[in-house]
Image 1 (tube, helix red, strand yellow):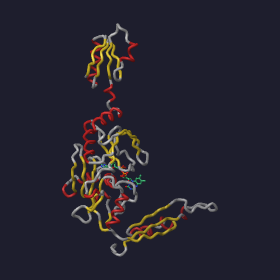
Image 2 (cartoon, helix red, strand yellow):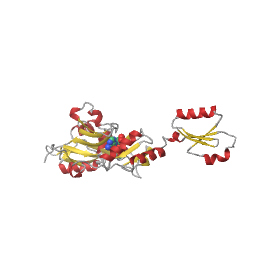
Image 3 (cartoon, protein in one colour):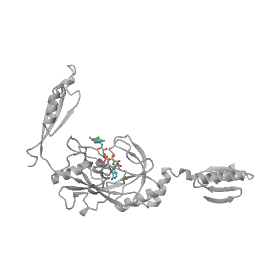
Image 4 (cartoon, helix red, strand yellow):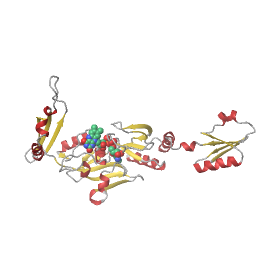
Length: 342
Ligand SMILES: Cc1cc2nc3c(=O)[nH]c(=O)nc-3n(C[C@H](O)[C@H](O)[C@H](O)COP(=O)(O)OP(=O)(O)OC[C@H]3O[C@@H](n4cnc5c(N)ncnc54)[C@H](O)[C@@H]3O)c2cc1C
């Protein structure tokens, strides 16, 4: 606690905690002083209210605002020295179901990431990442805490690539934070590999899909996170740790960690050889599909993959009464060509 001393009958005190504040108020009371709470040193603005006979204690209570985001960013900026830059922003997810004031940053290097985590730790802030912000639930930063965007982090792979075949393997792929599902799909096509649980959305990030245990279709395939064999994660002390499927009993939790194990730097995912498939489009009446259980079962049992799209009211015409039975259902039937290898 700093005492700035007397100016005539005015005493300035600046407590740093509730305990010190209580102490100041007690002392003021014991000394028959009038305690005036202010933010900063406000003697000038109070001067006209202070009579020469009065004994005044001006109590600077700025510390009460130390959790205010403006104070946090002030201290954060001072400590991080613009390496990397940090700023206040209102984070909004894609679906606009989450609106959160945060301190944000986009580290470019592992060293910058480490610095961010160190300052956040000193400030007792929690750290969370955002990918493309397409999750609906509150799984981003808490209010006034640190939100990190990892899409620009430099990779440590040779020639700076962000996605590659893992050295010494033929079907393990290293994927950096920030790689989107579209980039991952293009890589699979180029290398004739595939993940049996691909994602249709193209703008989300592969590491987020894994972190949330999302996606994956088909009764005989798993979710993308199940195919992860290795992850490198920076922990709260700034150590980059490697977790492997084969030597870690915790790996199931690490695979789909919702960003709660630290900041994921990259992951290695196991792919299969690509299958060549034939896609057949059929347009069938809704009543022929949904009212005939046997046919519906056959459709699913006899094909590798079936997708049904029904856009209600597609048979509606102005001169006839609408009956959903007449709507067309778009049926996509997907099967391997031969054994799937050409
Ligand atoms: C229109 C739409 C359609 C969708 N369709 C489907 C669907 O068919 N099936 C399905 O299962 N889901 C679906 N989803 C959900 C979506 O795919 C997931 O929520 C996915 O995680 C979003 O990816 P993102 O890059 O936007 O991640 P974000 O939402 O930004 O982040 C997801 C989580 O990952 C964490 N994270 C991201 N990067 C890191 C990192 N480097 N280190 C640590 N943690 C990190 C974040 O902290 C957060 O907790 C859909 C969402 C939308 C908006």
